[in-house]
Amino acid sequence: MQSLIDQFIEADNYEDWGSAMQIAEQAVFQYPNDAGAWALRARAHWRLGDTQAADADVSRALSIDPQCGLAIATQAGRVFDEGDARTSARMLDDAIKRVPPHANLHIARGFQRMQTGDHRGAIQDFKRAIELAPNYQRSYVNTASLLTETGHADEALEFWDQAARTAPGNGQLAYNAGTAHFQAEHYDRALAHLDRARQLLGERNDVQMNRASALQRLGRHQEAIDEWLSLYQREPDWDWVLRGLAESYYRLGDLENARRYSTELDRVDGRRAGAVKLGWLLFHDKRSEELIAHVQPLLTTEPMHPEFGQMMGMSLRRLERHDEALDWMERNVAQNPQYHYARGDLAKLLSEIYARHDEALAHIQTAMSLGPDSSFYSDVHAEILERINGPKKSASKGGFFRRLFGG
Image (cartoon, rainbow, N blue to C red; front, side, top):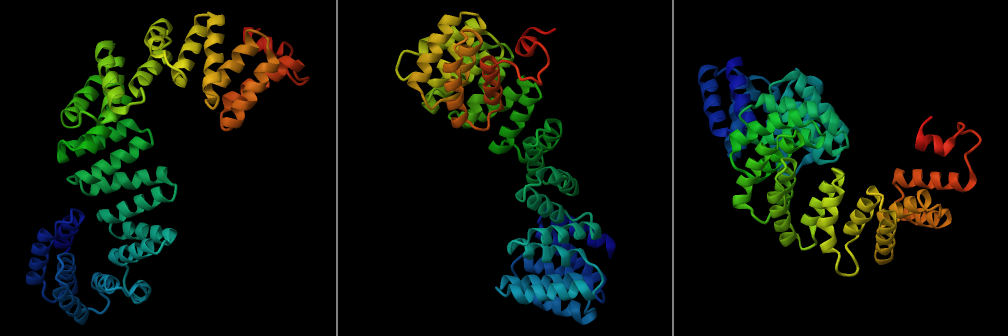
């Protein structure tokens, strides 16, 4: 009988109720005096929508063994489906107190607690179900989902992994586990799951998108491009596909294709998202001359695009063309007064290079009010005050100049 129960749980894991019914029929045929056999068939009937047959099998199971946990769980599920959640909950509470421990009782109560917002109680039930039946994937899935929903995504990862292991042929589970690891920035583990999802589910947009993104994060850019190009054939106007292609081609040194897909992104987005993307890639690689050549032709209208103005100012500063950098930064702030990043850059330049500390202080204070969570602004603010007032007495000798020049 245990072998048939394990086979039934495997079919349940895949929600393959046709196979589950065949297994249950075999159990009833071989073990007609075992309440568990009738309970298996009751659950299969219920999941297949034959409620009358489910009720009949529940009655037969309970006539053989009034403490049959699976039969009680199915009966309580039927009552819940009919809208009587209170009676269903009482049935489960009573059964869990008086009958031998059974995973399905805790799964059923956990599900109902989840529906009523008792997330902590639901998680406790699902974890108990895992202890009782570690091969039942829905306990892991529900635990992982609730932990994620309640702000414990890191703790949920273990349960996503376990869920995927209980049903290795379930592509959706593999995708869910891979996506959870991707969001946690565990890209190797994400890719292991997403590779399996890709194999099982084929060319599905969300699977391919997340898999390509994981490959990109791991520096496997040609493989990422291959996946994105497959997506591109079906979704040529999907902005995230175009972003991914532009970046991975850039990382491989193929600027021609990086520009091609950046231009396509501009067409789709309408807000110069492609040009901005390519600009920041050049900026972070400190390719200042190329960045200036890329951005300057795009700065012919007013107000200027704030990110292009910022790129120009910072690139010119890196090249120590300070007067030109100052001109661009001041124009950017004047034309985009709410773009606090430009104010932060301007404040730092005014104070460090031109010793115009009072002006710098006004700009950094405005930047801090517009972007209060930026630690960069707090640091710049402190440095400007130190230049105005001198080092704090508690500071080591040399203060600001020691930080700049060492020693």
